[in-house]
Length: 601
Image (tube, rainbow, N blue to C red; front, side, top):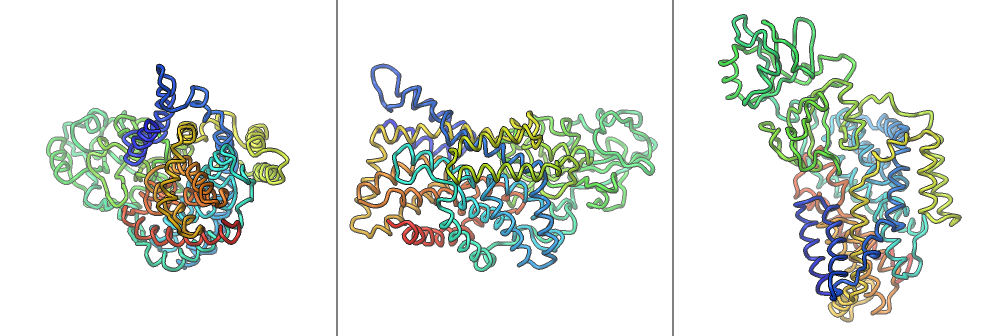
């Protein structure tokens, strides 16, 4: 038990601080449990190699993998974007209608496709709604994240947490587990209604306007002192050199944003072009560096403001300036723009990036990127489309996508409907129906075979596989029983409903610090043992843990969707505490009372 607790403590610290990605920590947990369970004569964890790798064969892991594929099949048809645009057309400049469209779109959708995917798909729509309605995107993006969590509580497949909780509970022998498709939908509706009312009232009042309603992206990123145009003099020493030799491969902190030559505007790739007298370059640099470059390279300042309109001049009917969010699992996480050759790989120039409220506009190539960082990118329409096609990025505004398979909309929606119906009627287990649906997505042309592997969030799959043995170890060593005894003793003679509420609060607090999936694996065995010891309903206690782990509002790291909106909304860490804490308290009460009334304790 002590060995398992030591692993848990180390894992919690690593989950909270993230010196390495959380999926790597989870695999480390799995390996540690197996090594200490099989090395030498001492069995310190009770975990055999077969149990250690059981997470890879878990029904929860396979179901979540299949749901990623199903979500991708729906996403590739563009149906969610079409629904989003129809809702956006009704909002106008009314912030109340904009908020209603945001919550009304993401909530129901999150019940039937993975809620993290729903936020990634709808984030551009919500940003555009805010832009067109002259509203701060900060007022809508946090509600987008929160409402997706409400929606995730509506069905078994709304979030990976629900699926994992169902599997862990079934392994423990909890009554009513594994969960059916709509087993807790009534409670999810109650939670959604309470949360929605909060977002329209106190939540709306508390949500800050970190990013002002914008007319110009360069203003939003405060680029006024960092964007300049210069022209090449006749006597410039760089005339005849390539742009790469003269201006790119230097020690100066400067980026060539675009080249204006006569009536033509050129974007990346600019490196091979030969510099001519009279060329005008738009540069991203600071004032001191600009003075040095002008002296060394024979350049003159052009008295013209470089704004969004100027940077969009290359292609009249396309966006050349966009915000791009670094998604979870992106190859950019932990890397720098230089180490990934970002500019050369995508023919795109990063002008600035925002990390929460912080704007970074100098020496960006040396800064290691994190999930949720928002890059301001200048590129051709083709390059932006390539970025939009990759799961590594979320384009934070609507981009024309001719590759949507709209003719497959009825097929993709029908497949998801059949998967849900078959599982709901208990004709097939959810893992079987979900896998069959994933296969049909490929066979019917909704997804290409290669896209299947691109659209799975492998970090989540490895996270699940890594933490599942931890729950087994807690049960086999008696750790879950030991913690449950402590909770029962601390609760004393408190009413059962209060102990149920405490279980929700403990889980919610843990989830806001570490991964929601790790929290549910740790807490469900404890909830089961605690309920057994005090003679309460084990199913009620497990349900409280499941809902608490699916709704983490108080920190940006508590849930992936919170990280999605952290950069685009310009939020501070304290914003999540200010807006999320009252909501967490409200839902602690609502969920506890709801379980008591609908299920009983």
